[in-house]
Length: 211
Image (spheres, rainbow, N blue to C red):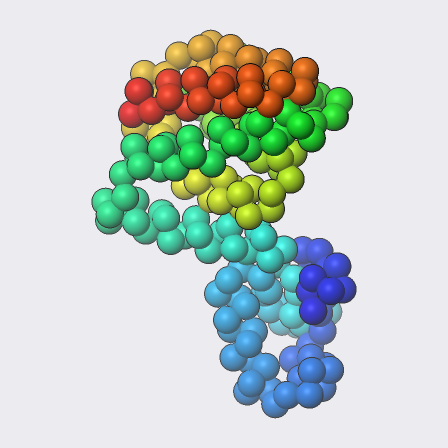
């Protein structure tokens, strides 16, 4: 229903009674459905005047958050390592960079330039650098046009970036990272799919070596 109606985060779905009537189910059945959807970060309930059930995130965003929670637990319990997460990024983001080079327009290049600019002058272990770095990679994943791989990339960034900063933030050369980003941007701007893949692989292998 959320997808079909093209609802966005913050949109009101209705009250429990209104939704039970609309879908022709009992309120206990509806509450169970809402509980499952809330657990997937798709809906949230609000009480009081103007309250009701609201869209919390899109299905893709909800899936990404659920995956992030699961991977964070795996990381905390050491059932997956930082090295494995970086390796997963290589398998996903190298081909995504190639797709982004095929699909990119001038706005893509401007967004990537802005992310690089926002990171400049900040220490690699700072939140400012980390957030700008994540935005650079999310822009590429979104431009690639594969929603599933974009969601997977999002959860690796959500979980991996803060953990990476804690682990190797002091050993990263921020200037080297930004130069690698510029090489990726250059290939994407020129529509060079193979070149973008090579630049992304060099970048992530540098991160892997630091880990």
